[in-house]
Amino acid sequence: MASAQPRLAAELAGIPIVAPAVPVVSNVTGEPHAGPESIRARLVEQVTAPVYWERSIRYLLAEGFTRFIELGPGTALTGFLKRIDKNALALNIADPASLEATVRSLR
Image 1 (tube, rainbow, N blue to C red):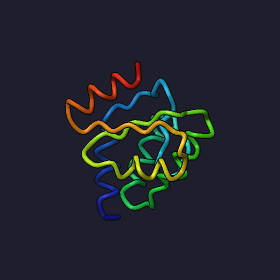
Image 2: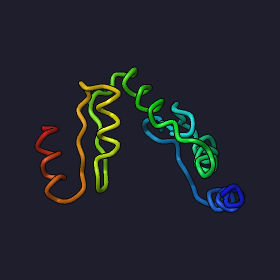
Image 3: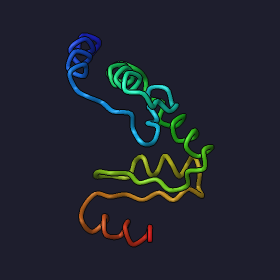
Image 4: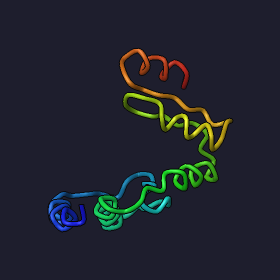
């Protein structure tokens, strides 16, 4: 996959990325990155880097986040989150019914 990195970097160089309103937590580092160039670099690194998902979640928990939403089929990440912090609210959206249930739960 390392051979894909230069091509991805070239493609991303042509795509405008604006600074996000909130920092983006990268699963490459488990830390926030706010600038467009930093975000581009983390996206390229993500092709071959190990995933620091648990580190990312622990960072968010330490920052006071308590609600997490997993998008897509399955609940593997929701299960991992519950092993890290049983008190965190973990929701999953996989279809229209689960979207409606999540919206109701967040009201």
